Length: 188
Image 1: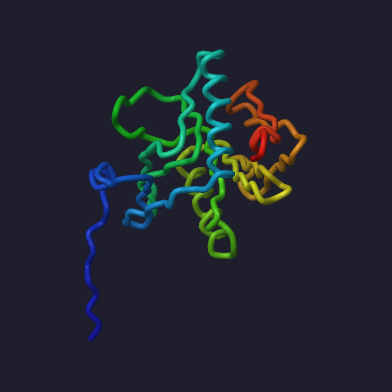
Image 2: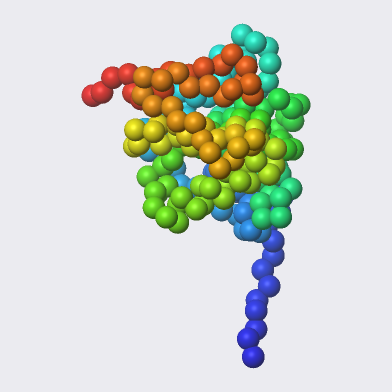
């Protein structure tokens, strides 16, 4: 006879108590390790440029790493992108209900290999299922620095390389980013 232990499903209340970056996936709290220099620099640059856009356009909210978005998917209850653009209401100190319209995931050192590629594709599908319209997969080690996916055609992507000007199409109208700006301005 096989006895299966029942485990309590993680709740949003549990997530509020979690120190550091985490999401609820498959009923469990999944913690994320701190990231290195290049991915952190890229996420910061994207968020900074989105914040500048918001200040000028007076439209939307640019949110940086570790923002909690509560979603209601069969396998996932939260998302925490590295950078995002959100057009809903200000929820004060609480997590945001629903998904951002534009989400950015910047690969860290452990985000390579077949298992990681599957996890990245699964999370991108979850973003789209939750209502996100554009998802960027940013890879600082690839010549294809940004792979921009859209909910309209989730299995195809647009590539932005060094020297290109990237955009989030009509989701963040008029906003652009020079891919070269994701890389450090100087080295020491």
